[in-house]
Image (cartoon, rainbow, N blue to C red; front, top):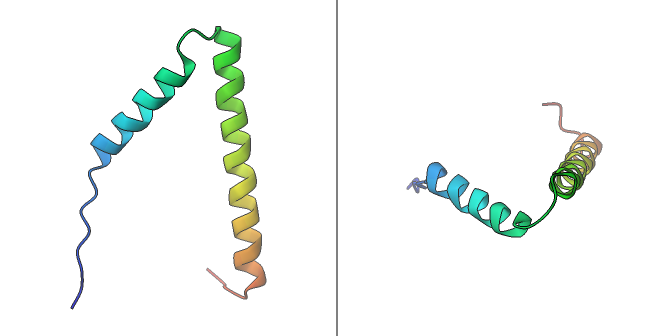
Length: 61
């Protein structure tokens, strides 16, 4: 039997947005930019690490 998973993407994105807004409340524009730059850099590093691990495992896709 195949299980179905319902993803409420709009609600999920709203929760992420609200958490980020709460975290960045009171920060200067420069601090907000630095916050998102750090988050983006960390996501890119994680993606590179996962891609390398995937390639090392012999996956071709």
